[in-house]
Image (cartoon, rainbow, N blue to C red; front, side, top):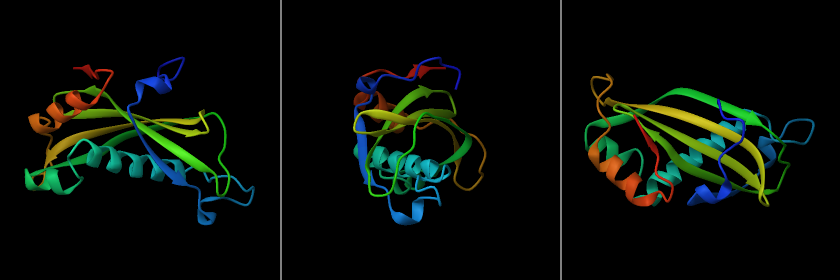
Length: 151
């Protein structure tokens, strides 16, 4: 994540709420770091549902699928058992065959973790990179209040 400052909370139109479960904390009583990627995946799935493309059904019906190719996280603070979190998701960049998402995990407005996930669109059978379907691009552009960068 090359940015000095994370994206402002106001740039995220979508957020999914979840509560930290006992199985997600470590012996220190805080969320075990890999679980933030699970939260990001849940947030991404709910984002796709929110824009009208339930994942993976809609992509599979079009013969496509998304494959993770990069993931990074910048940890700023920790969540604890039973805290309610907001997982904010936005499409940050649309490429020819890829999509990059910013996912921020907040507790009561405080940024805990800034995550970036990059997916490549591929043919479901071939598993080879293919252009991102126009239906996905159109839904993202119609939904986002801050337009994603285009490559």
